[in-house]
Structure formats: C-alpha cells, structure tokens
Image (cartoon, rainbow, N blue to C red):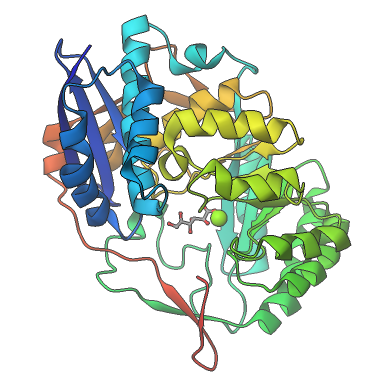
Length: 405
Ligand code: CS2
Ligand code: MG
C-alpha cells in the first residue's frame, strides 16, 4: 500500500498545532501530531523539504523501516524538530495500519492491560486556599490523582497557574514574543511545603498528589525539597532539575525517598536510558509527539518495565488530541503504565478541528473501539484558525539572570 501524498497543516484553534495527513494510493489516510510549542514552522519546513519527498511511493505498512529510514537515514539522528516530524509520520502510519486491520491501535500493540486510563488533573491557583478549593472540585469530579501548582508570593508569573485565563487553550494566542517571568528559589522553597501540608490536612492521603518543578532547582536544592515534601507522600515530583544533568538525579536519588518523574523533553529512548538503567527516576514522561511516535514509546515502555519505571506521558495542551489519543492506546496496553497527564478535552473551537470520542469517568479516560488512533482532522475547520506566532515565557532570576522556564 503505497504512500501517495502527505499534507501538512498548521492551525491555531486556541493553540498552534502542526498536523500531518498521510494518504495512500487506495485513499486510506492516517493523521499525526508534529507540534513543537514555539517552533512550529521549523517542523513544517523539515517535513516539507526533507521528509515528505523521501516517503512518496514507500509502503505505508512498513512502519519500522520508515522509522529507521527517517532516523538513521537522516545521519543527524535526534533533535526536537526532526523527531517531531518522525513521530507524526509514525502515528499516521499506525493509524493507517489500524484502519486496514479494522482494529484500534492498542490491539495491535498487544491488547488492553487495564479497563481505562487513570489521569491526573491540573489543579492550580493564586493562593493555597484557591488551590485547595479547586482540589475539592477535582476530587468531587472523581479525580484520583492531581498535580498541585500555586503562585509563589512575591514571584511574578509563576509557572503552572492560569492567572487571569480560564482555560489552558487560551494561554498561547497572545504571545508573539516571549513574555518574561521571575523566579526566586528561596521564595519558592520558603512557601511550597505549606501547599502540600494544608492539602494533606484538609483531604488526607487518599488523593494522590504530584508537583512539577520545571527544572528550576539545583540537585542539592532538589534534595532539600524532596526531604521537605516526604511527609506528604507525593506520587511524584516532576523535573526537579534539568535533564541534561544525568548525575544530578543520582544526587537526589541517594538522599530522598521522593519518587521522581522526568522526560517530557526527551527526544529518544537514549535520552531516557541512563535514568532508567540507573534507576534514578520512577516515572518517564516522554510524549509520542516528542519521543519518536508510537514505535519509540512502545520500546521505551518495554525497556522501562525491566527497571520498574512506569509510564506517565506528558499531556500538556500544546500536544494535539492526536497525540492524546495515541497515548490512550499506549496507556491501555503498557503493562507498566503509571498515570496520564490530562488538562481536559479542550474548547469547542479545538473540538471543531479535532474529532475524537473519549469519556472521563471516575478519574479515568475510556475510549471507543474504532479502527486506528480514533481521531479525525477537519481540514476546512482548521483553515478558519490560522497559525499565530506564539512563545512560551522565559524566566529570569531577580537579578536578571536567565533561568529555566
Ligand atoms: C509542563 C508543560 O505539562 C507539563 O508537565 O511541563 O506544560 C510544558 O511547560 C509545556 O508542554 C511546554 O511546551
Ligand atoms: Mg512538566
């Protein structure tokens, strides 16, 4: 079954998304997500100039060979831009294979290991009371796991909270240049324990809690934080330290019992390898769009399982519903699935462009048995929402030093 055409779309139904559609000679098609937040057009150029011309006429059924061809064959193996392109092609080919087989992708991976996919909700606010009131709402809605983030007193624009916005999908339409946010590790460490202390006092230990540090600490500061939060038994602390510092995680690991999650920025299984084989992390956060698609994530899950590391795929709003649904299949299959990040089903605008069926019940997502990945992309609707250049913020310390956002 030969590939006849591959189309690339960039649209902004609230957020910018890069979507591809692979069409075969017999008019079967599959879709994939190639979004790299803030660098969308670089992926488009990579796809149009360097990927698509090489794939026309190739057999759409040979997913593994096409993956190797785009990865090894490029000579320049990794990097966020090229991997997003490979990931999108890979997803689209799994979608096609599912459609040909008449089976949902999780069946092609080996079938279901569980009934539904447990997700963690984003719970945030401007004050501890705000966050805890929102946590009460989440618990009432049936969530079993929640990520708590709070504005830190005295720091402008703290990561992970919504500020004046009501919905995550509003966050990126108005940032044609990167806004600048502040950071102070001292203010953060002086405050953050209170959030989890009060959460446990008010809600007890049945609700599982996570927290994302967004790579803003040094390893020894992360040790301090880990020890401070140990009594509140988090499910995981995410990205305490930037992932380039592999040994830094050993420092944290050796000194606190805090479970660690890492990997939303990993591009390959090789990025994850040292953290997994040295058992310095507990959850690996790699997304299908940024880590090599379904083919690569299946290998990553199998490798992680050998070391009791569980999958907790990234589920931010800058990953499109195609990636979200690809994760549903992987999460249903992976024997070592942990938890899936979830920020809601999005706005009516988003759902006008991406059509899929998934339902949230008791803190878990259930999907319907449809062939392939189970998402459709409405080209005409997408045209109504053209790309808008938009950036993540950058962070500076109080003295002006550039820091990790
Ligand atoms: C975050 C993301 O969801 C998360 O855990 O770290 O929101 C991240 O900031 C964005 O995906 C960056 O594009
Ligand atoms: Mg994160």
